[in-house]
Image (cartoon, rainbow, N blue to C red; front, side, top):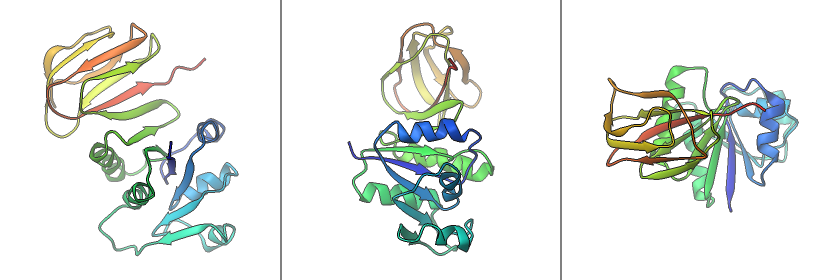
Length: 209
């Protein structure tokens, strides 16, 4: 598989855990602008640095001489993360994992979620606390009993949502801004999610051992 991990300039609180996430798989590693600071703190070298570089000091960039750098002007239509995703797609990415992509500025946080919605089969996101992904079709999720799961409509309402394997099942309802499925609980080893139309943002809690 041609997998890519993109480390962005958002919040990463647990470097040892995040380092494990990165090193447990063989993937191309891209530092998205200030995400290089996170990789530097974890003593990991990226395959590429991409962005307008406005969050990086010249000294830090000099320390990574020899690494491919794709620099863009600060005045641009795309976010640095969008540019990195486009680069990974151009390089043939089959799976893209985002780390450090959430937290911080609300506008960047929301832009990341909408970016994921544009590529629902390609992009997932992880934090120390949860996995975040997009569902646009009937899906079966492998889960652990007791995990908390939320299903949130992204953009327009999501029609005729049905589930099995949850404590509070959804039975053909519409999820919209007035009716959300937040902090539901997995009661089986797999969860089935059915929907007629729309885009669901799914967050799945990571259980601590």
